[in-house]
Structure formats: structure tokens, C-alpha cells
Length: 333
Image (cartoon, rainbow, N blue to C red; front, side, top):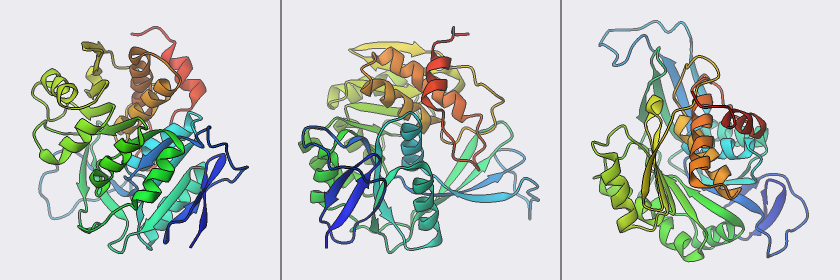
């Protein structure tokens, strides 16, 4: 069964049974010109957003949620793809989705933003989570791990084709992306990943940490960020490691030198930190693909992350290229 697999602004042809794709077709690109700037792998799903009076939430029989309870498409892979596309990069997203209303929300989100999406069937259903958001914008995420099966896999031929048509691949840590790493590294296409709140010890994250050329993670669970960052570069192939630390900025390890990246000033009140790390990664990759040095890429990331904190979790919105460049050029506070 052959189907046209469209990437934003270009097209590639797939011959993988069961794969479904949406996008914008144009003329077939030259084999020497990648059709996609960034392929995002995994991390598609829906979140239910609940604003709570405080975190941690004290036990009570019930709470009245005056702000409403909303379900919208957008998990880590979706938000990275949205951020990349808003910055003008040709972006394609690959994941497993269920034939369910949640999967329809994800498909609609990609159509709305003109992002190419290739899906494989997931009988267990589309990934979903519940985010409890406190008044200060902090969040607690509850992930439904039942939406996966041990035998889930991405077809190697599909991975090789999409990666080979891309300048860069961003791999989320959702299941079954770990199984793709040997195939992706063999293509020679640069890889990035986000380890999120890795504690530096959980073995699940290690294949991602050591296979990627660019590694992002949060300082939330790290007692010694520098030690973890240097271990990643010593044991893996990472050229750059970035640890984000919220309002304290970020740590950047590049060319063996550790530097601190100041936090950017949010352009509006902070209402929700959901998606800030994904926005940071997307803007950093934009700078990387534009040939900017790591320090500039990290500045872009800080600006995009600060912007994301001003966007309510019920909306899927990313900073655009003009605003990113304008804010990144402003004097730092």
C-alpha cells in the first residue's frame, strides 16, 4: 500500500503499510536537498488542563474548578513541532495515534498549523495526561502509561526514509522511541533529545542521553547538574548539553566549557510553565540550524521558554521568528 507522505512545503513518498499522513504537497524535492528541516519523533498526545488553588493539592472530597477543565492536543513532541514551525522551519512529526477522539484532536492541531504528520495505528489509544497547574504556573503532570504496548515499533524503513529527508531529528523519550536510536544513528543525521526531569540515574533515559548530539534536560531532579552534563558528553556523542533551570536560567556545556545562561524576561505575567522546555528546545534548534553559536542558540531558547510561560496551558501557541529575534537582541536584564 503506497501513500503520499507530505512534509510542510515538500513531499516524500512512503510505501509503509498502515502509515497515514497529512501535509502540504509540492513538487518532489531533489535527492540532494532535504525536504524537512526537523523530523520530530514521538510525543504526540492530549493533555487535560486543571487549574488548582495550590500545589501540592491538599486532600479534599471535592474542588470547584471555576476556570474550567479543558482537554487540548499537545504533548512534548507536538509542542516542539509547533515551536519549530512557528519559527519557519519545515517540520514533520511521526508517532503512533489511536483511532479515537484524542487522536483526532492531534491530527486537527497539525492541520491547523500546517505541520506534516505521519501516524501509525495505536490500538491502545492516543497518549494522554492530566496537568494540574498552580497559581504560580508550576505544574504536576499525571501520565497515562496504559496507552502503549511492549511490542510497539516504528518500521525501520519508514525511519530511514523520513530521517534521510531531514536535516535534523528530535527524538522524544516516549515509548517506543528508544528502539529507534540504532536506526537513526546509522543514518548520520544529527539527533537531539529532551530528557525532561531525569535524575541522572534512571537507566531508561541513558540510551537517549548517549545517542544524541544535542541533549536537553531539566535541573528539577539533579543534585549536581555539571556532573550529569559532563557524564553525558564523556559516555555519549553529545556536542552540546543544556540543563534548564526555570527562572534561574540554564546551564550550557559546549566545547568542554560550562556557562550560565540568564533567564529571559517574560513579555507578560507568568501563567503556566507547561511547554516551556519544549519551546526552549525548538528555539535552540532553530539557532543551531541557522549556524549560530551555542551561546546564541541558548539565548533563543531562554527567550522562547519565557514566552511559553505566558501562554495559558489551554492554548497551543508559540513565539514566531520575528518576535524571537527582536527579544533576543534586547539588552539582558
